[in-house]
Image 1 (cartoon, rainbow over the protein chains, first blue to last red):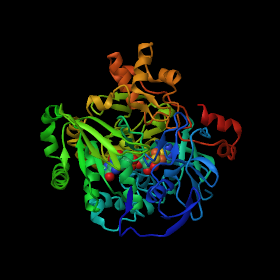
Image 2 (image 1 turned 180 degrees about the vertical axis):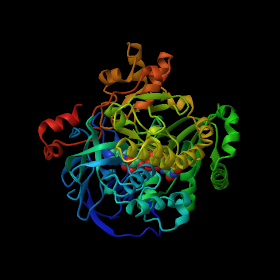
Image 3 (image 1 turned 90 degrees about the horizontal axis):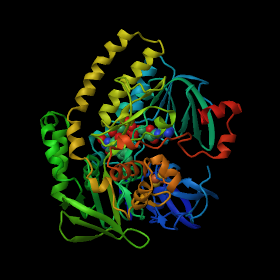
Length: 98
Length: 472
Ligand SMILES: Cc1cc2nc3c(=O)[nH]c(=O)nc-3n(C[C@H](O)[C@@H](O)[C@H](O)COP(=O)(O)OP(=O)(O)OC[C@H]3O[C@@H](n4cnc5c(N)ncnc54)[C@H](O)[C@@H]3O)c2cc1C
Ligand code: FES
C-alpha cells in the first residue's frame, strides 16, 4: 500500500489496468502507476506461479514485468505510463522475449 | 536520435554524479562528448528525478539531494550531447556502443568510454523476500523521488547501513509512519569499526549522520541485534518475523517491508566488456580493477563513481572529473603534466570525500546469516533456486557460480545474476570454506540489458558489425 504525498502535483494520465480505468501522474513509471493504484503484484512466475511485484524499481530484478498494449514481458519500472496505455498483469509461463 | 554525431571522442554511460561531472569537464575542455543513460532524466540514483521530482517541499529529500542541481546546470551548459532513455547493452573492444532507445537499437562508436553505471542494492535474501510488498529501501526511495509515493499502512524497515536511515529520515519528513526499524547490524561490527572511528570523526559525515540518526531514533521504534528475519503472507507480505538476539520469535504486522543492507558496484557491463575484477574483502563485493584514473584492464575503457567501488556521491563526482582528465590526456588533448596539475584539486577533494568511509564499511558490513542465508531461502529470484540447492550442488562438486548456472539455471534468468550473484558466491565460498575471491563470479556476456530481435533487426549497421558488438 502506497499513497501520494498531498502536495505531489503534476499532469494526470488516464490508463487501464486489466481493463479497469486508472489514473497516474505523467512522471510515473508503469510500475509506480500500478503501485499508486493499489496493485502490488503484477505477475506470477513461470517456475512456480508465485505472485511477484516490483522489488528494485531500477531495472535489475525483472519482477515488474507486465503486458503493455498487448506486448508481454515489458519492464514496468523502466517505462513511463502514457495516456490510454493498456497495462495487464501477467500470468506465469510466457517466455522472456529476448 | 537524429541529432547525434556519427562518432564521439568520449561516450559516458550513466548520468549520476560521476557521469555528469565527467561529461561536463570533458565537453568544456573540447572533447565531443555524449552522455547516455537509461533513465528519462539526469541524476543517477542519489539525484534521481532532480529536474522533475513532484516532491515540492525541499526539506523532505534534504539538501544533499538538491546538490544534484549544481551538477545538472553546468552539464546543460557544457556542450555535451545527452541521450536519456538509452539502455546500453554492449561495448565492444573497438569501443562501439550498442544501445536501445524507444524500441530501436543502434550502435554508436566512440574513441574513449567512461562507465559511470553506479551501484545497486546488495541483494538481501531472507525467506519471503519474493512476496509482493517486500521491496528494497532504495526502491521505495525511487518511488518517493520520482512519484511522491510513500508506503502507508503498516510499514517495517529492516537491515543496516546509511541508506536505510536516510530513507527513514526522508519518510518521516514526508509525514510517513514507520512501525519499526529492525536493525540487523551485528554487534561485533562495533569492535571492528572502533579503531577507524577517529578518521570518521574528522569527516564531514559525522555531524550530519548523527543528527539524522538521532531524529529517526526519537520518532521510530528501533529494534537492534535482529536475527532470523523473514517475511510471511498469503499472496503478499502480511507479517514480519524476527528474533532479537537469542530471544523468542517476534511478529509484526506489515503491509510493506523495506529491506536494505548496503550497496555494491553494478559490475555487469564492465564484466561483459571483459574488465578484470577483484574481490574486495572490506566491502564484501566484486569490484572492477581500476587505477587512480579509473582506467580498467581494457584499453579505452575507464570507470568512475560507485561502479568502481563504493565511495559515495561526492567521491563519485570527483572520480568523474579525474577520469575525464585522463580521457583528455589519452586522446591527445592535454599533456601528462597538464593532466596531473589539473587533477590535484580533484584528488584532494576525493581524499576528503573518502575520509571515514572505511568506518562505515566496517560498521555496516552485513552479518553472516544475511550474506549466507539458510537452506529454505530463495537466492535466485528468476529461477527460484534456494540456498539449499546451491549447497547440494557444492556437495556434488560444483566449485563456482558459472557451474551453478548449468546445474541449477541460477544466474541464467533475465536479471543476469544481479539479484543472485553476490549471495550465490557467498554460499559457495562458505560451503567450500574458502574466500569468495577463490570462488569467482559469473562470466557475463553481452547483451547486459534485454534486447528484442525486433530491436536488433532495426540496427542500420552491417551484420558483421553487429556480430562484433555481440560476441567480442
Ligand atoms: C536505489 C539507490 C538509491 C540511492 N540513493 C542514495 C541517496 O539518496 N543518497 C546517497 O548518498 N546515496 C545513494 N545511493 C548510493 C549511490 O551509489 C550514490 O553514491 C551515487 O548515486 C553514485 O553515483 P554514480 O554516479 O557512481 O552512479 P549512479 O548515481 O548510480 O548513476 C548511474 C547511472 O547509470 C545508469 N546506468 C546504469 N547502467 C546503465 C546501462 N547499461 N545503460 C544506460 N544507463 C545505465 C543508471 O540509470 C544511473 O542513472 C543510492 C544507491 C541506490 C542503488
Ligand atoms: S522493479 Fe526491478 S526491474 Fe522493475
